[in-house]
Amino acid sequence: MKMVSYSMEKTVKVERQKRSAILSQTVKTGIIKSNLVPMFAGLTLALYTYDIDPGTKLLDVVFALIGTILVIGAAGTLNNVYDRDIDAIMERTKSRPTVTGEIDTKFAITLAGIMAVLGIIALAFTTPLAALLGFLGLFFYVVPYTMWTKRRTIYNTEVGSISGAMPPLIGWAAMTGTLAHPAIAALFIIQVIWQMPHFYAIAIRRHDEYKAARIPMLPVVKGVKRTYTQTNIYLVLLSLTSFLFLPLSLGLTLVALLMNVGWLVLSIYGYKKNKDSEKWAKLLFIYSLIHMTILFSTVIVYSLVGIFILN
Image (cartoon, rainbow, N blue to C red; front, side):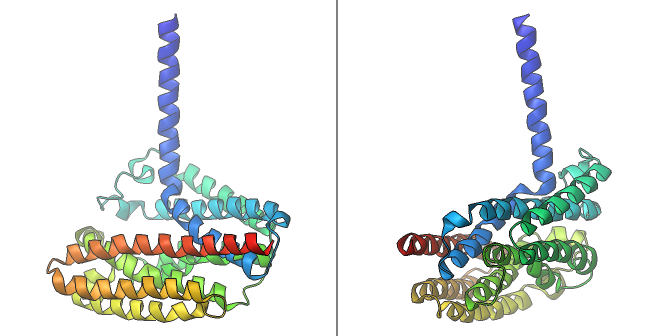
């Protein structure tokens, strides 16, 4: 009897793990986690900038966290549902539950709807502006990006970058109810521009898959040389945005400038050194992840240290 009981418990455990994995892939937990870093950067920077006692905002922080997770999860789920035809063609997405049928389409849509509503309500418990930004992030990702530009124009990345840059705005707005400060403008613009070289690098590495799926990514339509030129233009603009931090902190300005200029130098040097465009793209992709982690983590640490000193 003990053996049978153990076997049943093991089977139940495996089934739970499988369901958890299916749900995780459907709501895109990886994207949720990566977006929480810039959200907390905006949140902590707002607390520091306006000298707000964190103790008075603990509940708002919790609601901001829950709301952001739910809204991003809803957006990812709807994206998976809508894109299941092209996801089936691409190697990196063909095993998604919405493609394999491991999750029912109607259930996924219902789940996304519930997450969206609860997420926006949670953000509304912080400030109305945070709720509005959460809705706009969801809307821009699903409608202008996923349903409209992704399959029609090389500027789909630019359109998608708007929703991708909403997390720091949400974090800031949840604490202050306003966006009237150059520091949050810096975080938003950096997050917008960061996405271009990041996703261009992915598009080069997955060129054949995007081509097979007929997704007009810049490298697929215009080639690597045009992508290289456009990447460097965006990296120059990214370097200039570093000075938006200057009214707040010389230290943050220098860190941002160092990371941004470093990316530009790496792009130019890596392109000239590597005749293989995929190696160049891989180099930029890895740096983009390091760039985001270091820059936004620096903002968070700087803000938390400042808050501790001030309070």
